[in-house]
Image 1 (cartoon, one colour):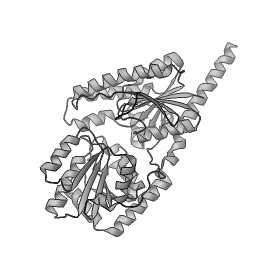
Image 2: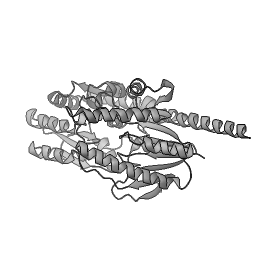
Image 3: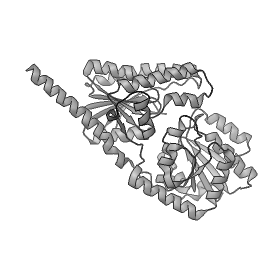
Image 4: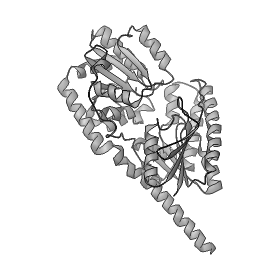
Length: 407
């Protein structure tokens, strides 16, 4: 049985759905899996969940400035390196998979390669240079150039790159010079058996007739402020008092978003739940009438796959989204597409879709069918496992050859 180490920095596991599905796929294929990641609220430093060893460190996020990110990443790197060595006490790792952001873990992979001939696999979740541009538009170019260098070094150090979509695959090939044979697309597909629309809970509409829902991270590049500003247009300009908004998730901007909601007089219309347990997410999604994907067009979002969009589709929610390249590829006929970054148009699209029940039903059905037939993790899982089967199989063959030659 091969041991595989998975490194994650930006989310705890199993809260990171993509990484957890990957871990479960590896376990089901007979591999031993250890994960190094930050703690969530109340998490222990070590636990075993469904056959996966979880080594966790206390997260440290001093702020959203450039210096704050550097400090956070230095701390995370040190904590990850320490827990990696601790996890290695139980035996060598045949492979290490680093998930970004950030693109800083290739030195740990090089160390493991030197010690144990560990194979480095890079699971490319986000474009860090574009993330910087989107969070700090017009900011200094030195951090951007440094992030490009880290991305290139990570790509080139990795034996194989797993990309979440074809846009990311093209970047690995064209920007970092990876061979096309060394880059595999594995989309972040939802699990339709788990994300399944159930009975509506009318009380979650808080006395209103309709519910619009958002789920996801609440950072500067995620456009959640657009939802709040669109809600102001819906309520105060379009005079619609029959639509409630529920926003699930957390992030750097949560406090600012709460203040914006109150400043715009939307306390009775817009509710923030924070990070919610799965059962509450399922209830809200099963009650909602539309799902909101307000990601504005920027260097990151236009080429990134939005998990929230596919989760709405799994729950048979029609989607209101800005017209972004990869969002169209994901949602196809399951969404209404709005001119990017136009708050007023976004608000009108919400109302128009709310008022058009036949179209809502049509989009909802199209989304669920697309998830079941194309996007579900079950369609992505084998491509993911094939990467490891090929890499580890080749490594075992190489070791047998070396042993034969030595004999």
